Length: 394
Image 1: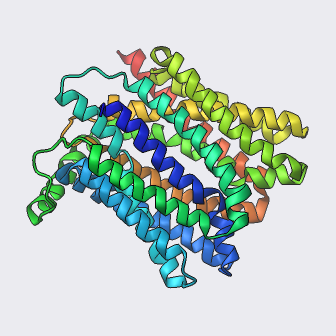
Image 2: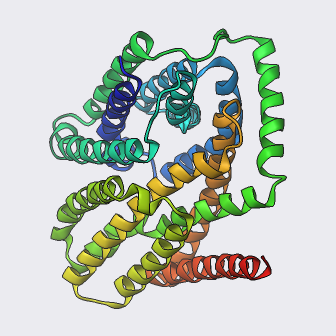
Image 3: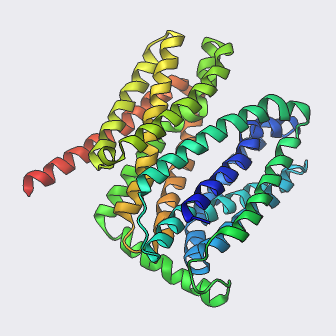
């Protein structure tokens, strides 16, 4: 099977499996009589485990191979979902840890594999277009499967969404085992490989954290996630206050806007694959959020939020592309280097999510968003001034 086709098909299977339970996970856990505090702790454990395992899993992947890593990810994911069927609080928290490990083994692995396997075979690949098209497919299937799961499957039988998700993951395991091309010569998990993983981590850390430009880029690439912290988690509460009936349309709008952003990037990838465009998009989205906060008309808010999603999608694809273009120094440590970024992102997101929750309780959603807008504005302005100063020196 063509490597790019495998990449698309596996991504579709993965997003389909995730979309069965993601839209209903929170209310599913509440329906099992877990308290809001317990569910909140479950999410916190997931983020904590994510950033603790991101780097080790990336290093292990560089030594055991992408195929074994993907297979391990699916195994951890299925076991984690099985534990969600239980009413035990301890098993719930174990499920969070296993799901985080699964996410860490998969994050960035498939993209790194696609680039490396094509480099090895001396095959040309337009990674910009591949990633934007993959984002388009993912958003489409996420919207359709998520809607069906929340509207019909969950209503029919609450645990059925979890069971269907497990079933699709099992199919993805078989699909990967049969069709994913092995890139590395050594594929067996051993003590020697695990020792090699430690060396890989050290080398990747030297390549990234010890280079000022790499640290600068990683902080820059986290900015879109920081800006999206409030909107991605609290949009339901904002629109519910204005008009509860519009929430369903907002969900559809989010999916359509995401797909539209992916199409735009695919068509204009050559023009958008520049760092200065990322700065521009961040500033545009800062403006979108400010208008969203101060304008009270529900329809105007809807349009502004959809535009925010379009630009956020563009930035997300840009960051994914820029990581492999500017951050990765060698193919050998590609996955580990990407994992270093995801580790940093997970730590920052985990901390700021807690800050967001505390501030929201004290000053409200929109005032909290204003604080985050101000923080991102200061960071991006500082980066632009530093870059301008360097140009003048040269």
